[in-house]
Length: 138
Image (tube, rainbow, N blue to C red):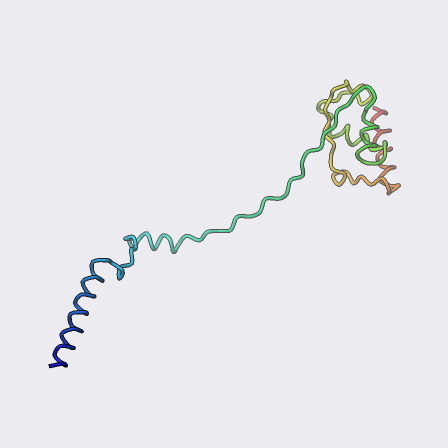
């Protein structure tokens, strides 16, 4: 008699557990329906990693005044006034005469690497001087 009662209790527990399991949906995994051709497209598509953009340096500018002309700006930014010619070359579109730059003119200061500017290298200073002589010889 005890054995029959135990079996009936276990059977009732299994039935009750099955009903709860079916109603609550714990056994289901919700996955969206996907067509097989979509899967094939996803497999065929390879995403290339984006190439990092080269770092761009911010544009450096300065403003000419009655007392701050190209040679003084060059002294300030490059350490030698002789490098004014490179500032002029960079801004030829807005400066017609390097000796007469109107006050208030904003000039772009090129990076020293662009023209090989090195105030500690006598060859670099001589090159800038030769360029200025050529400019005034015109």
